[in-house]
Image (cartoon, rainbow, N blue to C red; front, side, top):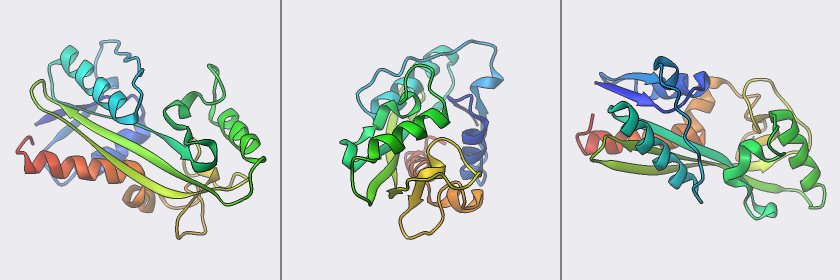
Length: 196
């Protein structure tokens, strides 16, 4: 069976392929298609954005699609940056600018800066729609540490660990992260509902 993962991010693709590796499923990404697909994520939640992406890409390609939307929620910032995590520092946002803005915003508050990464994973085959959520709890530290990761990983200290998400191994991160939790739940639901 072939499934399209609605992403152009090779890091995410590798992680999700690993999760589905025990099944007879081939997972392609948007990079494998000539169509220029750009879904506007204008939902009010991670779940809305993930489902919209899955449904729009499924409609265009006529293949089963999985997708995700994820971000960081910081308690002291009323769950910001939330669904705006990728462009937190503005339209020309970079990981570095986003991290710098987050550090600046949190200077007003006392530690610990409790936070969680959230990932909504969705599936659409034109008939069936599924969406699930995975969370990865921890706190934000004031100085970036580590090189193994992207986004807010160097500032995120997972609950129960003394290393940031950018300092832990990819193998461990792929077991405990928000994305791993969401896609493992989605995989279970797909099997349960005999969709794969």
